[in-house]
Length: 126
Image 1 (tube, rainbow, N blue to C red):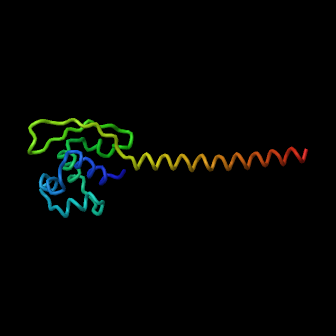
Image 2: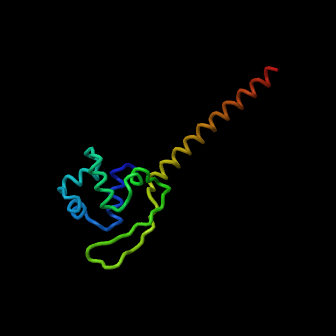
Image 3: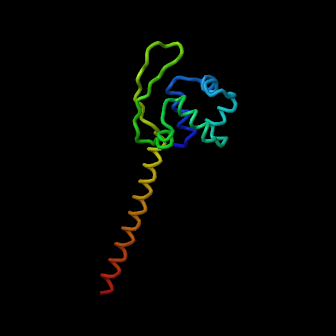
């Protein structure tokens, strides 16, 4: 999962719209939307601001992956209580890893078949 996708996902978990997030970052909605779509290079200072607004450490934002489970606190201006969410990230990342494993197994099966053919050829030549 790419950084801009993580930012979008965390914003959604918080229950915030792009407009709310842009407001918290004191930037235009269009500019923030470009960040979430990965259409702009984000300066480190802006990433620090985003991580602060989202309530995550910057290094954790970079380090988040498909196997990380987060306890996120969702607060909105209309809620007086906080709701804890456990969130398992990135089904797409898991599907990618599964497909990669399938391709590796397929390749290994071809190699095994090839090696068996070589063994049979060697047996018949002996």
